[in-house]
Image (cartoon, rainbow, N blue to C red; front, side, top):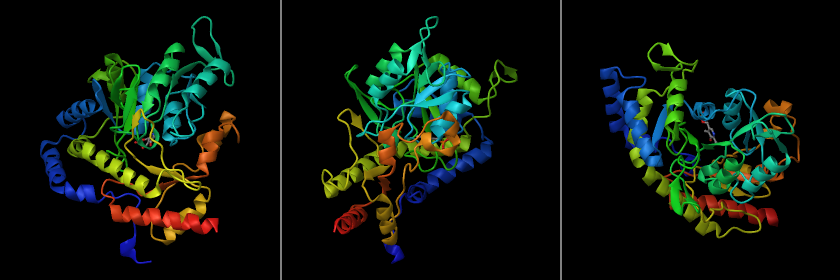
Length: 400
Ligand SMILES: *Cc1c(COP(=O)(O)O)cnc(C)c1O
C-alpha cells in the first residue's frame, strides 16, 4: 500500500497548523500575564460559547464528563437516585451519572436517528415505574430508586427528539440534561416553539466536551455546561471551584473541575471557525450521500430527521459484514472507527446493573453493524470517492 494514499479517520493537524500564529500569540499572552486558570480568557470564551449555543450562561469546566456530572448535581439529582439514558453512547455519559451519586438506567434508541426513543422513555416511566404518592415522582421497579433526570445524547452530532423528551420529562418531573458532547452547533426544529434551536439550549442544561477530536476541540482536556437557568449556572460555578463563590468561603464541598485559561484561549480562537467547519462536515456528508445514493440493501447511510440539522461529528454507516469491511478498508489504507462496539448495558463495568443480552435490541443490533468512515472538515471529494468506492467494491465482492 502506497502511504501517500492513506486516508486518515480524522485530521487534527491541519486546523492547528492553519491557526498556528494566532494560537502561539495567545499562548504568549498567557505566559506574560500568568493567566492559567480562570480569568478573562475563560470568561471571554464562556460568553462567546453561550452566544454560539443561544443559551444565557456557559460555565467552562475541565471535561465533558465533569460537565454532565455538575449539570446533574446542579439539577438536583441526589445520591441514590436513578438517571435514565441510552446504552448507545460513550461510557462518559454513565460515568458522570455514577459520579453524581446516581445509578444509570437505560431505554433503547430509535432505529433511524440512533438517539433516545421518546416512546421508550414514556413506556419506561409508565410501565417500569410506580408513582411515589408523597412526592409525585416515578420510582423504578427494577431498582426501587427515584428517577430524577434523563440524559438524552445527541449522538454523532444529530440531536435527540427534544420536544417529545421534554414533554415526557415534564409530566414525570425529570430534569433534562442534554449530552451535547458530540453536537456543538447541531440544530433542532422545535415544533412546540415553531423555531430552530441550537444544541445546548434544548433542555434544563447541556454538557459539551472539547476533547481534541470533537467538532470544537481544545489542545488538551476541556468541557462546558450551557443553561438558561441562573441558579443552576451559579451552582455549577461553585461545584467546579471547590464549592466557593468567594475565595476560601466554601458553601458546599465541590471539585477541582475548572477550565484552563490556555485551553479557553485556544477554544476561543477555534470557535470563530466552528460554523464554517460544521458546514464543511455537512458538505462532506452530502457528498458521501450522493455517492452512496439513498443507501442500498447492503448499506444504510445516516438518517437526518426533518427536524434536525446534524453536524456530523461522525459519519456512520451500517452494513452486515462490518468487521470484514473494516479490515478490507484498512488494507486499502483507509482508517475507520466503531462508535461503539459494545453497548453499555453489556459492558463488564455494568454487570452489576443486571441487564442482559436482548434488553435493548435496537442498540444491540446496530452495535454489530456500524462503522464510522473518515469525516473531518478538510476531507476532500477525491478522498471521499475513494472511501465510498472501496466500500461499494467490498459490498459487491461480499455478495458474489
Ligand atoms: C466525548 C464524550 C463525553 C465525555 O467528554 P470528555 O471531555 O472526554 O470527558 C461524554 N459523552 C459523549 C457522548 C462523548 O462523546
